[in-house]
Image (tube, rainbow, N blue to C red):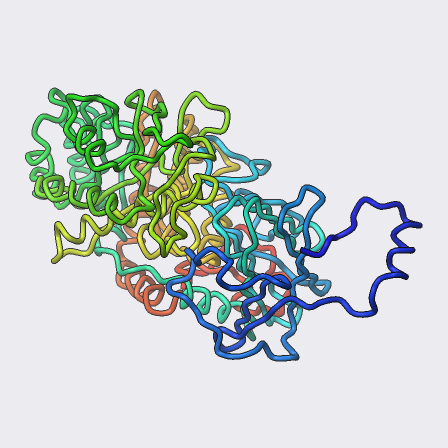
Length: 562
């Protein structure tokens, strides 16, 4: 790696410059698609790189990069010995993407970390949230654009304060640059390379109602009936973790949810579908069949010394399935056969960053071992696979649901994901707060996720943490009803947040907002079809109208629906 001097005194730096060769070694560059170039540092062989997880399939070189290709990264090693690169851009260039990060639409001046993290109640100063997208979209002053993908799963720092600079905690990695005439073309090319969403079931495009937790099952049915009695349109009721027996996944509380098939049948009779939560942590319990099976199948993530890793989550001490391994994914997927026979329509994977309680890092040790598939990179540490743990979990869940119900489109929602994971699951923006800041942030977050390849996403309408008031809820419902994923949700101990909970005026406003969504359902469905076929986002930034207009570049409070 060439050394990048950053700490030498100015006189010594000048002397070194005078002694340096007249030319600098250029990074290796190979064309992998039309105006798409993969760069690697000097002396880094392709076989030395980890396999790409973001890309849908390997992209072999089809030739040398054009000599006039306008973007070229400079690779360097930081003072801490980390692998990094930087890309300069012209004044007036606007930066977007970076996936799920709070704050304004425009990313210029921001520092972001790609590191999946349990970020309850996050704010502008939270550097990393639940998903990782090592991706930046740059729109030039003339409206042309380019995209930068750092092809690594390791923790990554994206510094956009003066250039596009990315620094990895892992080994050498490739940088893929897409150059196009418009930002729309960059986004659709990204989707071609990383995968597009599959068409969801029609009901998943409707309104969803959730809380942590509706308990017991009679409360679920009471809320569902409340929608029908009040003529408020809705399609889905959600079951959070309290439906389980002691938080054991794939089980049901023998008191509160003793007959899940009956509950699902009643919901279906009212025209509802149901989604049930499954976390990755499997309670360590010799009397629990799934715990025993996982141990027999050698399914758990290992410690550095080869023992089954145990971390504490909701059930207490838990093992964690190693979803990077195909045999483990197959075993996990097989558990859905009985699960969906009970009438369950969709699956919600939460806590899959993976989150671990009572440790400062909020996750498992980075030296834990994954016995990963060779096409994912083979055996490696959690430092390598942390950011794709959730992605591989929803991959396993989706494949399991598809096998159990081959005649139905699956629906899976995930809190954690990685660039390219849109091909397995929809996402939501995690544990937000019932305040005006999070209402305002929900629009740019959803837009930037769409610009990062993930169009099927949205916030918890009304805010998960805290209560808020009726005015805020009504305004949030007005916005949220126009976002791709529309779900009301709140946390334990909060006031009720059904659309009628704040009185008749807010109820009427919520009804009008949701009726508008349902009147537009054919249009929403068409936009989902377009996202499936082309990768275009469902909601889009105003600058898509005219990428040359600087006045549209930072508009946070409005968006295009299609």
